[in-house]
Image (cartoon, rainbow, N blue to C red; front, side, top):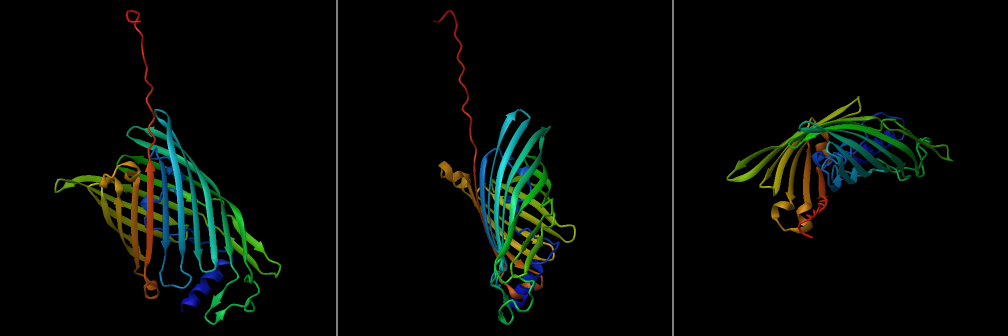
Length: 327
């Protein structure tokens, strides 16, 4: 049954299709740059995030995704700030591999108590498929369908995205779109087989709020958030809540409507007060349990996140004045 499922996924992937194709993440509250270029530089620090995800463990050919994002922002005038970022996403499911690398540029303008930013991302998207096919009967020799590639095929196309992002000290909301040009990845092979894959335009809406209070004389931070992903055909909605204790640890839960429930946990090294660069590190973990029919065929999904942020402090210029009375 598992092999049949993978074969079906792969067959649909080599033909033109419009469906949600961007990788799935659970810790989206720590991964805003990947889908919204307007987020770049929002923290006015140099930040790096690594996320590694294995989805549907125990499933043959299950999705495996790795992400690296970097961004930095700086104020150029009192109300004006610019940011830049880089995101690299590597994704693999069965014989299909993809690599998405994109540069983000953003402009931030302060509006009363908040900041509104707009961002643009330019990049490349590579999609490829190996010749190693599997069916319920075993290896695929190419005789069943001559249109299915019997050797490695792939191509690279231009990628474009846009986003808007508004944030204050204790809240944020964003709206963005990826793969706006809906490029068609096509590779015609010498054996008359071909790969044709259309990137669907994706739309994202995100938001979150941080509420600070105290419990047992310790700081308690409640952080609800939501994340919506759609390709205008199907839509996924994540509802999340994390609770952070004493600036040190957080635990939380997430509900992906009609798909999965998740447990989240993390450690903020700043709360350990180790000093030095350790205070800039956060580590997060998530486990997903499917509540759909897929739960019978997999052992859940795991995701690990590491985040590092360093704020550059400008040295203040020392100004000296001379008095003619004291030479």
